[in-house]
Image (cartoon, rainbow, N blue to C red; front, side, top):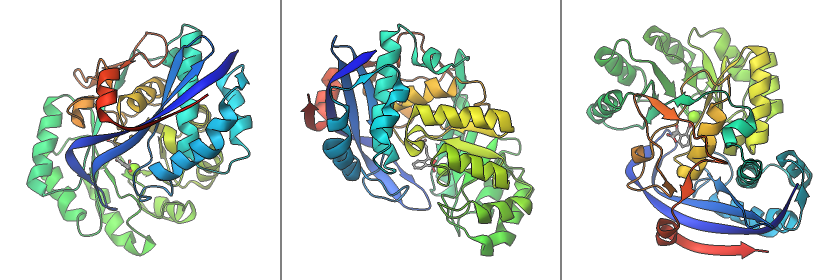
Length: 368
Ligand SMILES: O=C(O)CCC(=O)c1ccccc1C(=O)O
Ligand SMILES: [Mg+2]
């Protein structure tokens, strides 16, 4: 049992090493909220709000998450006694959606519980792997730059390569990449830039033997994706469309996808992510852990989640140095021969670099 005594929001801003472009637009500066929760004994757990500054990926933004945490979620959390992280549902249920703000609390509380029980977060979640496989994403760019980046990542040992596509940068782009790398474990992510009117084009991508096509159609659709999957050889993977266990259950029942990208923020936390994992394991749907251009805190949660058995496909989990000059955690996340070691230390298994945190902090607020 823990009693949440205090919580602090640390707003930070980090510069991406290079701008990241998707079919929606480009990210250069990364605003994030780091959430620190403490129990009576002073032990701390860490969470992260992974929403973007604008609502291009989901409807949430850093500002809407701050509003939810500041005005509803943190006032409800302070002073609460919890016997397990699952007890958070009582605080979350009266508040609709807003998954990324809830996920920050859920992850911080999971970290804190794991530390109190002297378990690694991986162990606390039921993870079984000692290391997880690292994948990497190459944003939309000039084809020569994209190929150059793939070369670099191949040398670093990454095990799965994802390329962003959009109308006008799809068939020819992937054809060129395939010509360079006939055997590369390659997949594409459209971030919902297509509709069923593009069926012919999407079917043409079948010739590239892609591992999967991620979120080709609308962000909230599971019906059109079913029609598409029936007419496509390439497995469909859903990202934006799956924001809960129930979404996953319905998409599986309809046959809308063969693979799901699980993002802790998008589904509202580790508890929901684990439920989706367990469901997909029973239903023979393959899984991997997605990424949000996040700091080391959220990266640590992703590593712990990916250590669960049914995350059989390398996720968008890359080294800290893929994104940042310097990360907020010590040590940083490193990829060794395509693998990331799963920490055995209590909780997330990484320390927060307080000196660096203060340097990149733009605003701080404590709730007690
Ligand atoms: O490397 C990462 O962190 C993930 C990159 C990525 O694909 C992504 C980044 C930002 C928003 C959405 C997505 C996505 O998976 O669709
Ligand atoms: Mg995606």
